[in-house]
Length: 391
Image (tube, rainbow, N blue to C red; front, top):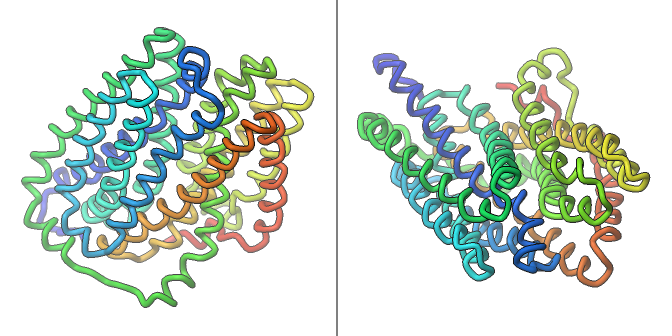
């Protein structure tokens, strides 16, 4: 996949620019998280409506991901990644209007951007950087989530209610800058990209399912846990008076997720049998204990362990199913992995929103995390390990 006659600088530029664009897309979708308490207090969003901000995004994202999960779609990766940045800027414009209809519509448009950009970015990164690009591609999602959530939280702290507008104006501008950086790079590499992206390898359905089943299950559990924290916990912490956890909880989780992903190559050499699943179970248990005793310190510690385990587990799942893939199959498998894991999370979040309206958010979150602890303990014995993700 790497042409030895091509300038290394141009190859690396494409790899890192495509990964950066993907991270920027993910940052945009996660900037909404710190704004949810404002949507609740200033715009009157109910638990169900807050869940719908997630479901509108993910339901559209899943549909678009599945459309572009065909390996043959990878040949359009350069056009798709550029289009995704333009669509993301449109989403930002809608979200910056800060009213119920525009927020829900904007979240749906963000799903379009993420859906067409996910597989395209993965294919372009692997085309440019080879096997090393799989690791970078697998890390971009949660690193982008950390940046987006942290930036959104900073805007809330500095701008208060104005953050509902300004946050997205800044992100939309960043998308246009990223597009300006990508266009000349992709133009200069158009011939070599065309050559590698047109090569398609397709597994038989039975072989595909055998490869995907267990990594997908682990990825779903990891993303469900992350999604519950992002969508429901800031409101829960506000209700029970854990202000430190409300401000720093999601950021602690996502930073730990990113650290888990970034440290995975080192961990693979020194602790290759780690899966991350047991850490998720321990972290979720500590979170429940901390919420019960009203201790922000215990909650934050639990979120850190949960996040680190989720980051490792989610990355392992994606690397296992894309191991040895050509760029077109990398694009396809990345899209399928994202679609299934996000879809599972969307169903759980929607049900949690409905139940939250009936039983109260505190009882629903406690029940969800209790069930997740049991599932994680059951999966820990069979989950893929770091050694399984190595090339």
